[in-house]
Length: 149
Image (cartoon, rainbow, N blue to C red; front, side):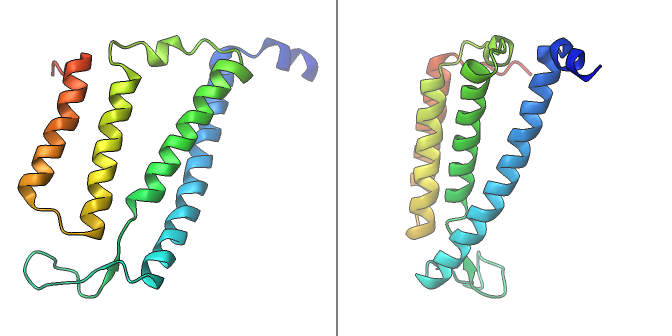
């Protein structure tokens, strides 16, 4: 009875299990790495201190929280693509069928990630942030990104 169940599982059911596992892995990895980065920020004194003007928090707050989240997203997406492409033999073309180049998405993500890290470590002026965000969005637009709604 159970042997036939595993033989008859569809690739959609397998994809749901793989996606659930990816979600749980990203939740666990994100939680662990974020708490680790918080401790590192406090030890190295990389903190965002309230200034009474723009920053309305009451006490110093650890920065660099985007680093573990970026690492988590990249790691889990990479493992998910590897699992779908090589390990499971699932047709994943439907999920990734798009005119947008993954290289362009990666370039834009790295630009925004680097901007966030620089802003956490050193105060980046708003016009410089806007410039880098425009460059990142241009990388996506040039690759064919189109938002029609």
